[in-house]
Length: 186
Image (tube, rainbow, N blue to C red):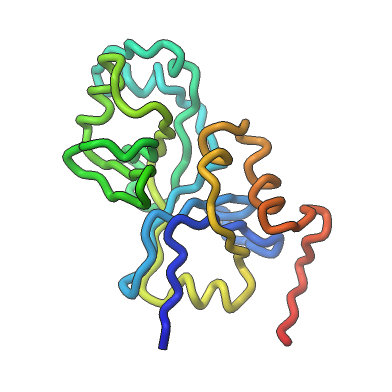
């Protein structure tokens, strides 16, 4: 039996999603295998910006163009800890290479590099991540809680947060107004 692998895909919350952590979210899946799945919500900014985050962790932020960039609520797991979704992958102490060009890093060295004016060209910092146990995401997909589509990094890094959800639906060819709370099975 072939297993489902949604690594490097978006999960689009269906209208019936009533879990407050995930209602109306767009989640990028960084890893999905037989042990479960790990992702980060990419359309839920917090009130904290990069300038504030860098001040909290005691690193001067040389890349001033990032100062007003939002830090995101990545999910309910370890939400006191920072995670960096970035392009290119680079060479950091603790990075999960999602694909050839996109990484998910948990080590502080990436933020230290950004503070020095270096680091990846594109990045999104989140507090927390979303995690699913083995078979849990597949069960939720079977319950029509999510739509999935191959991810486009431009949606993550180049679009305003308010446009990301609709842009992911557009990749699927779905008009957001056409989503229904009801689902059917053939």
